[in-house]
Image (tube, rainbow, N blue to C red):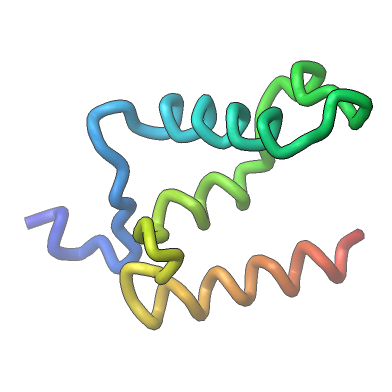
Length: 82
């Protein structure tokens, strides 16, 4: 009953956010050349980044249009605060 009220469900597997963060850190370190900034100094990824990624399908689409709208608002809000 409570799950039905969740408008923006994540699609993480049993590993949850911890496994997602590990995967994202591994992807970041693989995409950086050897001389680039070291991702090992990053202790945690920003919360908004993991929230958005947890609600994306492997194709990159969000679970719903409402979730995509919220993700766009998060990005614009983050960019305005920089």
